[in-house]
Length: 610
Image 1: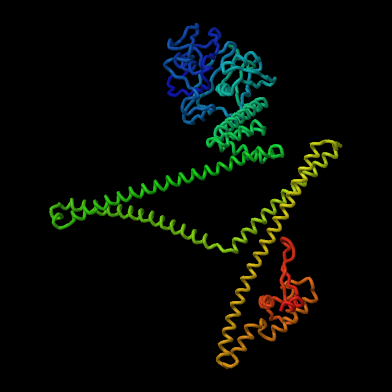
Image 2: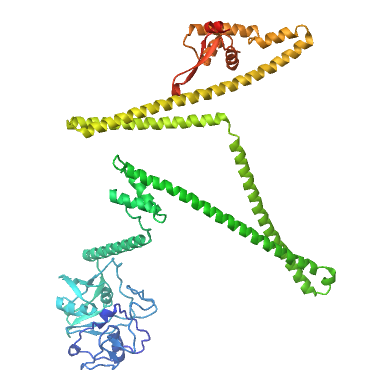
C-alpha cells in the first residue's frame, strides 16, 4: 500500500435504511497482512463495514455500529452536494485508490490507480440488473453471492458457463455499489491457478423486467400527477348550483311561499323557471303556476318601490355632497383671501424671502384645489339642469301625440288581441279533438263527466268565437276610421291647394276684366272640373268603371290610364275622383291583411241626388 496518497475517492450510494448493511467478512480467511491499518479502516468505513483486524478486534475505537460508520469520518451519501444517483465522472488528474476486500472464500485486489476507470455503457431507464464478466472458471454461484450481496439484496442470478453472469438487485442504487467493484482482480482462496483468478468487469445490463417495472412506476407517477391536478382543479372549480326538485303539489306550495319572501325570491324564481321550461305546466297545474307567476309579478312592485327608495337616498346623498362641497369651497375662498391679504404690500414686506416663497406656493396650491372643486360643483349643477330639460322635453313630446298615432296604437293592440284570441281558439279546438279521441277509444258514451266537459268546452269555444268576431269587427271599424282620417287629411290638403290655385286665377282674372270676374268666380267655385283634360279623364274613368261593376283600385285605374298618357299622376287622378263625390264612390273590401280600397261608378244614383 502507498502511504503518500493524498486523495481518497470512494463511491458510497445508498440511503439511511441501507446504512446498517455491512459486509460479513471472516478475518480467519485473510491471508495477507495489512500494511496501513488507518487507510484500511477508512475504506471499510466508507463501505459501511466495521473495520476489524486479523484477530477480529476493532482497529479504530470510534466506529459506531448503530450508524455503520466512524463518528469522526463522515460517509459519502447521495444527499451531499455534487452527488446524485449516478456519480459524476472522475477528473482525469485525480487518482482513485481502492482497497483490498477480503471475503470468506475469495479476495478482491484493487486495480492500478493510475489506470483510467473502466468504461460502462449508457444506463438504461430503471436499471436494477448488472452484467458481471471476468469471473474465474472455478467460481460458483455461492462465491458470486458472497461478493455482491454486500452491495444490496439480490433478487436473481443468471450464471453462464462462459465466465459471466447477470445479477438483479432489489433497488437501483445497489447497481452503483456493484459498479464500484468493476476492475477488481478476484482470487479464490490462496490459489494462484489461472482457473481460480479473474478480473471483474461490471456494467449496466438491459433487462425487460427492469424496463417493465420502470414503465409501471412512470405510469403510476403520471396517474398520481393527473389525480393531483384533478383534485386541484376540483378544489378551484366553483361549486355547482343545487339541483332543482321535481314538481309536486307540496313543492309548489313551498315555492309559492318563498316567492312572497324577498330573501328567498331569487331561488324560488329559478325553480319556477326550471319547472316551466321542463314542461310541467298542464291543465291540472295551470292555476298553481298562474298564482306563482302572479306572485312574481307582485314582486315587480316591490322592486320598483325599492328602486325609488334607492333613488331617493341617492338624491339625498347628492344634496348632502353638494352642500358639503359648497361649505368646502367657502372655506377655500377664505383661505385664499388670507393668502391674498398676506401678499399685500403692508404685510408682505415684513416676511422673509423663504416665508414669501412658501406663502406663494401655498396660495397657488389652494387656488388650484379650489378651482377643481368649483368645476366639480358646476358639473353637478349642469347635470341637474340637463336632467330637468330632458324631463321637460319628454313632457312636451308626450303632450303632442296626435289622434292618428293614437288610432294606430289602438289598431295594433286590437290586432295583438285578435292574434291571442285566435291562438286560444286553436288551443280549445285541440283540447276538444283530444277529448273526442279519448272518448272514441274508451267507448264510454254514458260518461256524464266527459259529456259535461265537452259541453263546457263547446260553450267556451262559442264564446271565444263570438268574442273573436266582435274584436275583428272592432278592428275593422278602427281601421276604417283610420283610413277615413287619412283620406280626410288628404282631401283637406288638396282643398287647400285648390284654394290657393283659385286665388291665383282670381287675381289674374281681376286684372284682365272686372266685368267677367263674378261669373268666373262662380264657375270656379261651383264646378269641380277645372279643364277640358280633367273632363276627358272623368269620361274615360267612368267608362272604365262601368265595365268593372265591382270596382277597381286606384293603381289598376292609373295603370290603364298610363297606356293612354304616361304623364298622368296617380295623386291627381285620386284627387279628381274624390272631388266628384256624386260620380265616383270609394268602398273598403276584404278583411284583415286583404283589406283594399276600391272605386265604383255611382253616376246613375248621383244624378238623382243632384
